[in-house]
Length: 79
Image (cartoon, rainbow, N blue to C red; front, side, top):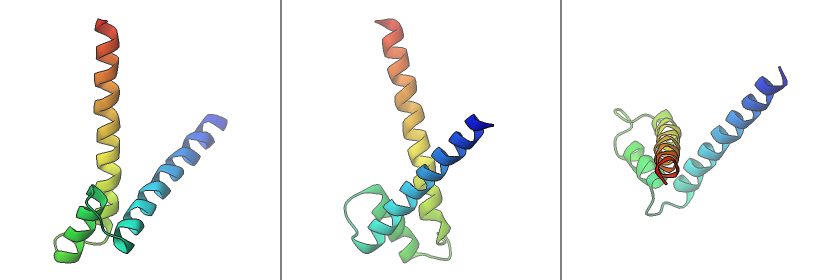
């Protein structure tokens, strides 16, 4: 049960991080992926609704983590 609670807290922290990145991109757009997601939403809210920048941010962060972890593990395995 304690492990489940810890995982829930960490998932919540990750979601908060993604929300903060989207909020930052809305307030101060830059040359980064979060800002691009916000621009897509602002340019075409019908096809890219408000939840999409947040959803894409979470998915891209997980995908980046997965590919990096996998590549590093494979590299160390073959060393």
